[in-house]
Amino acid sequence: MGRSQETFSKKEKEKNKIKKKQDKEQKKEERLASSSKGKGLDEMLAYVDDNGNISSTPPDPKKKRIVNQEDIQIGVNRQLPPDPADLIKRGTITFFNAAKGYGFIKDLDSQESVFVHQNEINGPVKENDRVTFEVEKGPKGLNAINVKLV
Image 1: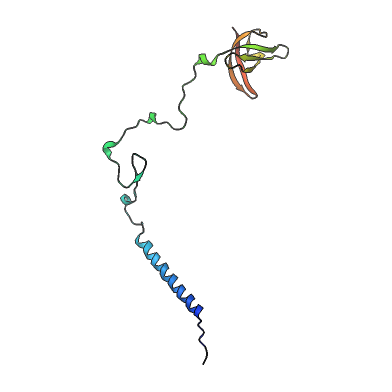
Image 2 (image 1 turned 90 degrees about the horizontal axis):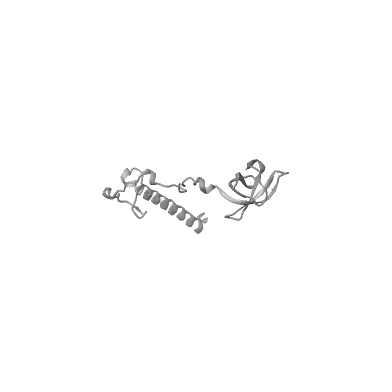
């Protein structure tokens, strides 16, 4: 008589295969039973309470606060336009070359040196003159504009 073709390992593999198939079917049935499909809208809604926590109970309409649209700030706070008097600065001319048409003004408040071109000066100036001016941002730094003798 011949030996059986089924070995122990073949039998174990077959048992494991059948067990996996049964586990898969069982998991499938569990998923179908606990599925959220077909639920009503009320069951799927979530609410946020006063502390920012998610809850399943809707908020009390009596505690509702009314917020004006203008009071809501997103990003940077709105700034008031600058006062025109604050834009005018005072300083002294530390260097001025009339032949080349440029010079530098030292701001009295910040002790910062600001470039000035001859076209922005109202009237003749020389070194150590006190002036008032406004500042604008240029491609290479700050430039003085509307320069006037004090």
